[in-house]
Image (cartoon, rainbow over all chains, first blue to last red; front, side):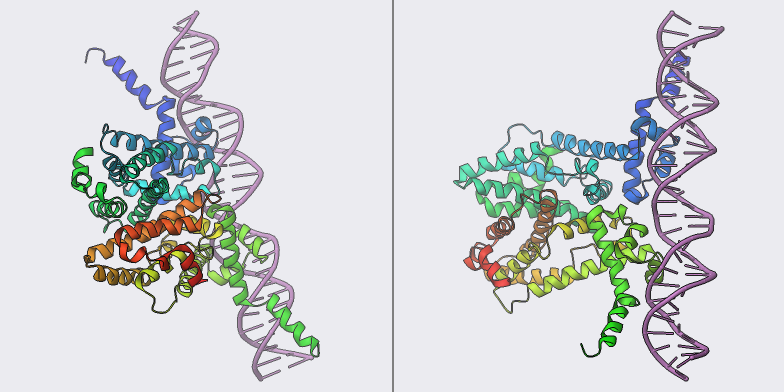
Length: 227
Length: 227
DNA sequence: ATACTTAATGGACAATCGTCCATTAGTGGG
DNA sequence: CCCACTAATGGACGATTGTCCATTAAGTAT
């Protein structure tokens, strides 16, 4: 109210002539275009039209379209893992609860939604031919895998199971989640998150009856814990 | 030897002026290009160069590039299911063996190999924006799902489990297989088929101990049965 | 042999692709 | 207030896209 001119300047500065904002607008427009119309439609023309920026910006900020798409893939990947980290930060809960936290988070609307699934699969489909994308299109983030593996090793130790059992449980759980994403992509309206969570829990209860039959690992209970 | 001229005529006819062979050559070239360089590189120019045919053939036989790609997706899908049917045709074996037959077939080199995984994921990534492809990029072939579901319902009945258990087992198994394909795609050299088969069996043994602990459902035993 | 049918060719075509650069216009320091 | 700096613009550019068609040539029927 007092310094109207300063406020105005700040606004105009933010609106036009903010390289960081422009960079971000291009990445957002790229991801939105991919989610809405696929990677093939993510041309420079379509991207800059959506971002309401001029043609030269892609070359100016990224040096070319390839780098822009790679940056978009990187940001998308970072967003997934940062949100995942945020959601599974629940202190030192029992290992089975920690595993289920990863499951619930991966299947939550924050991470698993129409936009993210479409983008995810579009990137993965192009990853083979596009090294820049390949780097950021793997779910096998080392930290997350280790996180799950440690929890399963703790469970296996308690139950007297072998180490290969823990490893199988780790990769099986991640594979199950991958499969759920595909299931969601191909049949969104019939997909039920609680159903998917219970399905995973049931499979894990088969491997570790003493841990994943605990009501604390049920879909409702986990939902309350995380959100 | 005797009728050299006839043989020659037949050869030339097969070589040039065989519409069916030309159609097939275009489809093969399309799939090969996608497997090798991705969907984005599957341009008319690249396809006809690989097929060693002329530019107009795409329009002549398919009416346009979109229809060619769709036909390629259809043929690829048909190949998967016909090979799958062939491999799981093992008479009236116990239900657990029938389920494991699907698992082993899906993870066999015939169906799961570098070429097929790359094509598969390329198609799936484009399916959202390309209705023609979407039709043929689903693993949820009704016949196959029913096949697995019937087997699990039989198992669940024997074991006194609920119907939802059979349904969970069905979709869980398919999800597990989807996840294995992704795992294979992202880490081909470290992927072991026996390991993957045993992993699935172990998960199912958790749900149905009486059936999937049977040595007849082990990777080696199944391998012998199918091949 | 001749006419007819049609598979196959390959270049023309407009549209679109991504890259680049001469130019304009905001912004902060002297 | 002006100068240097650089974010931002938008059109020009050659290359490449998919479609289409006039033409050629192979196979078949008369």
